[in-house]
Length: 146
Image (cartoon, rainbow, N blue to C red; front, top):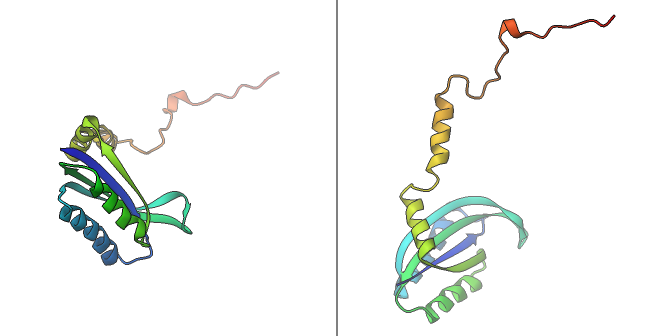
């Protein structure tokens, strides 16, 4: 099976229910075309790097799917995304074995875990986030020049 990932940005001026309905509509259409949905990731509202269609932010969705025979299915999905005015931008990417492994590890929590462990250790230290004072015996001594 070949794995693909389509990421699309939905117009943020729509209501949350409409945004979720749009994403679910595309997930259902991908399934109807004979693909197996591996994972749907709602990344949420994010700032865009530059304005697109006079919008500076958008709601990101990433849908990972697998299919037996690629070809016209990708064209059909992209055509639907291109025609939808509520979609600001989209990108379809073919995943190789390393991309599939990376996504699996990310879902299982094996990637990005160190950052969480560092935050936990930092939160456990008593002086986390506080300025340290010099001990009283190490105060600066002013020396007058003669």
